[in-house]
Image (cartoon, rainbow, N blue to C red):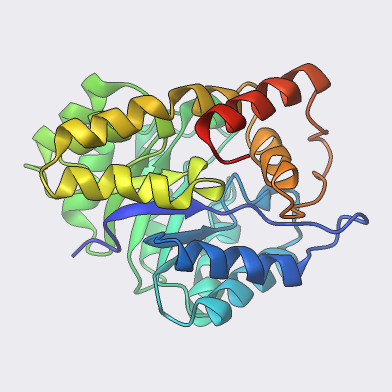
Length: 294
């Protein structure tokens, strides 16, 4: 059984002006996502700026999101690290705090071999019982989790159940599904590739777009699952200009700017991320207006 099917939101972490976590706004964002049809919440991923949180903040945010969500929809906690011991610690604690699943990014900077990646992910999986999604995003980590490695882990480690694929390499993604005979929970890590990923047997998306257009992102998936592929594709294509604007600077700079433009008080970034350049913010504003959300 998949942790979820449909649109999971890679949730931002709102900050106050002093860069403390704004838990009041975080609760509002979680409640809005649930009300508008989001199928799962991913806390403390890339979009949630987990890389600039202390371990205590990281786990406090995961615990808080689990408490607010109250099992209405699954919460998947981002607990990856380039240090295996840290990934184990964060994963164990997230499980204790009520997370329904974990998202483990490949170890970055170290540039482990494929055998090293297997050993890393197995070490985490051995210490928890909840299901795990691997996260393949070589553009950020400098490491590709090979299709054969993903297939081996999903077939032979009971609680490694799937992968968030953000490589954009559809040949490799097709290999994953072929090598596993489709027995892997595949999620798109790119908002502009939801429908193509679903066509290969994907379960849904872990979405940045869903922060500002949750019902629309959910509907892309729902239409596909109901058999209305033409509508799903049309919804996907209609969102492309906005998606492109959301990634004209490094994520999550634009999506936080978008939430602030919508009056949702997501707050500032933490360094080394900085506020969106004015010309790009204007591009984002126009895309949001054209899409009908501003």
